[in-house]
Length: 123
Image (cartoon, rainbow, N blue to C red):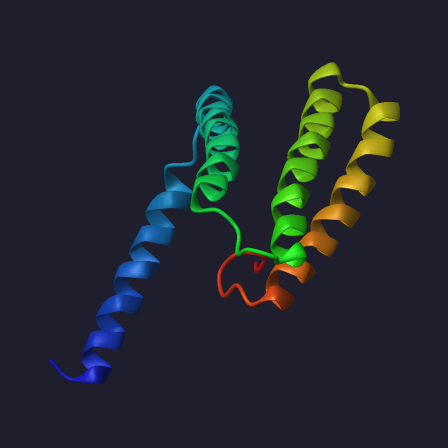
């Protein structure tokens, strides 16, 4: 199959999937159920990620690497504050927690990318 034919086939499949997804939009209950399932999965995965990174260890005498790992812990604390503010529906708490989380995460992502990671710290 030529490259053009393959491209047309892939585009056709993509359009068909988009159209079927639009036609099969979830109900509110399905959306909430699936969203909650995703949130539970992310909550379970965040802590194990930092634990697995600790098992990998950090290079000896590398304060930047240690700072990155400590930053992940701080990021988890801030993420939990945002999550808890949402759960309590506290706009006051959210107004304080969300900007702090965003500032910290953006800063940490820049440090991680500058350190040399190719996937971590990048969108």
